[in-house]
Length: 88
Image 1 (cartoon, rainbow, N blue to C red):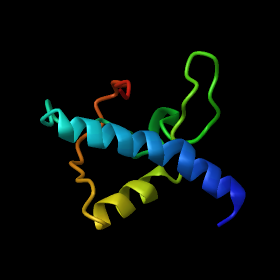
Image 2: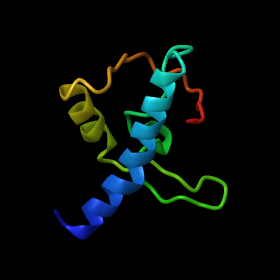
Image 3: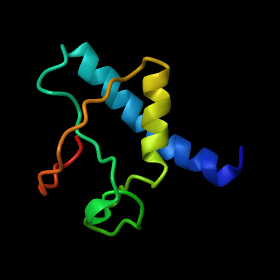
């Protein structure tokens, strides 16, 4: 695995999996953890700035699909409302 892929994997998946585990351990309140899957409104890819330091990479849907294939996560796909929901 190339070092830039490994860096992206660690930068994205470790916090995401930690959030999934925390969400599960506190009783799974609400409707899950909202994350982007499409490139609409630059939800994926791009560069961060001082107001939005973390940006999901364009490969995030593949990472999410891999977690679902391992049965570590579930996805519920919905319609895009045009509203940007911050990831906690």
